Length: 141
Image 1 (tube, rainbow, N blue to C red):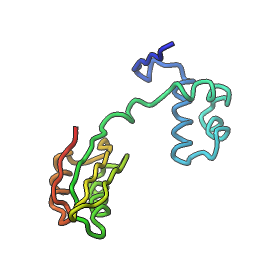
Image 2: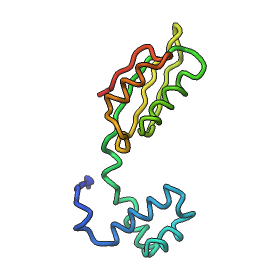
Image 3: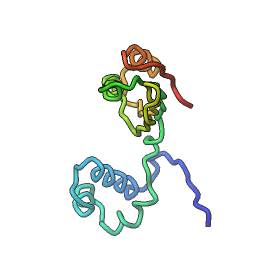
């Protein structure tokens, strides 16, 4: 049977589903050491958590994720500087893919979550382009 997904406003869901999401967040953030502790903190039975844990996901985690493609000079600290600039803008890194440097430069693709940023994505990209190690930078599709 093919899986079917629905996007539903959280306010209309039974509390058990919302508590499963809360418990999963506690586990991911380290706010709870194990499932028993997380379930207890949110007022949920362990059996309910196990029943729904693989079927309930927070939809916001897929939004506001963008890919920044950069060509960086092959020099010490180049990637670290790029990541620091992303962090300084208030974005968070989701994934990093970097090629082996060739001819003095390396291609880097960094997926970033921009939901917590104070400025715009364009502001962050402009700041990153000014870094000395950045040869070229653009927003991926």
